Length: 115
Length: 114
Image 1: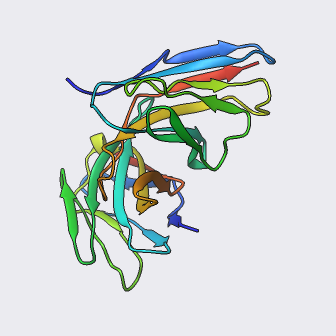
Image 2 (image 1 turned 60 degrees about the horizontal axis):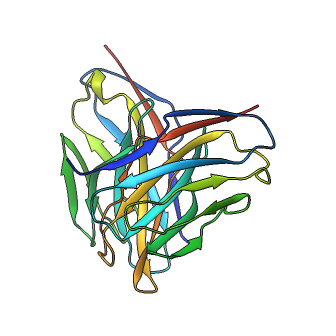
Image 3 (image 1 turned 180 degrees about the horizontal axis):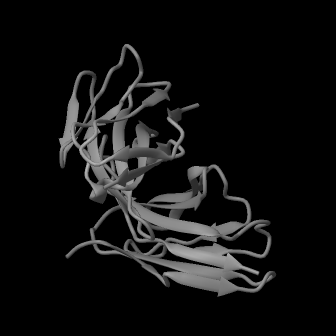
């Protein structure tokens, strides 16, 4: 079956530090890959996505590149802000049976940015 | 603005009672989903529906039931058979047949059963 593995948290950084959150996946086919962000007490918001190998998703200064050879989709940001503190989820989607049967999520990484 | 509305935000119930969580969307999406979120466990799929009057079990369907009588609505019932119902429940939707299409999430319902 499909699975997503992401680094355990919490990850604590100082403001303006460089961020990397690792994500690797196992899939039977050729999935689409996503990063979602969750702020306290809220649902998940799509941060970025990539649908084929070597695609780079980017949004709000965050980037992730779909690496098929290493089955990875690591999230990076050059200079984090306090407002980036949240839980980040890596996820994959494979279409089966002609329809979308939901995403497979990693366990989430809690990011804490200190001023 | 289009979106997904979950209500209520907080819900408290006594053990042994069934409880229904509401999820409504005005995005005209065909597919809808229910996830359960527990600390340190990420999100786990409970049920999903790709079309009205049809739904499938996810990874942890035991103790839950759903209905899909209208395209906009996908209520989840947590029954007394669910052994550990206290959790954060998230509803989501996406456009049908759109490969790589992301899920749109509601803001969740936090259920506490004592």
